[in-house]
Image (cartoon, rainbow, N blue to C red):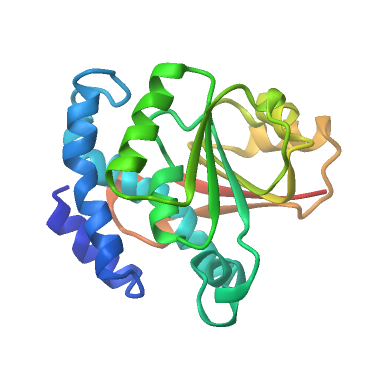
Length: 229
């Protein structure tokens, strides 16, 4: 997917995105190519699909919020009366080179993002890309989730591990919910997590990204939203 193809999708799906935000998206390609040549955070063959496999995939969370939680979407953007609201705090756990946090920080300028990863080399890339595209609502942390002293409104993440492993890391770190990008058949994984952590029925919502885009890459990709129990 070229940037021009990506741009057309964004103009269609997120017409509220500004020219400045689109410019930030456009600068990602060169920055990731440059940093990926020094520190491998995206597979060599995958870098040509940066906009489909990484940026657009990350924005699946924004699409879910826009369609299913529009008030939160508007608040994260700072639209309308939310322009004077206290910014929500978002933790991207296991961000790697900055996904999904960096694309979300572009589209949600009124939120404060903390990008966290235990691997220092990856955080270097996320830091430099965020700086390179001019993001002022992002800070990066080289740490494990358990060592973070603060709590957040929401946690976002992209398939860093199974939910059974993920939930203990974050149980005391958020107040509202988790937005988790995952692929494949999730029935058993979700059932196991619900049983182990005694989650109330109806607290987990699964949203297929294929309901938002017909691109075959997203056929099995999903957003999992977990409400705070």
